[in-house]
Length: 60
Image (tube, rainbow, N blue to C red):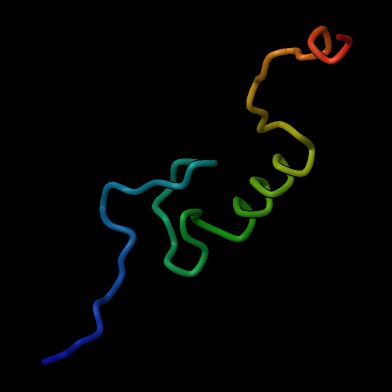
């Protein structure tokens, strides 16, 4: 019996950047280009979780 389970991206999984099918090598992206686009978005600050402004509380 084979103990290794083959991991596949599955038929319904798509690249979050362009929507093409995922590649096992660059999962969850379809290519290294899309992976780099995502990294650039993180580094530029495009992905931000909005928060509240606590400056008024710090003045007390």
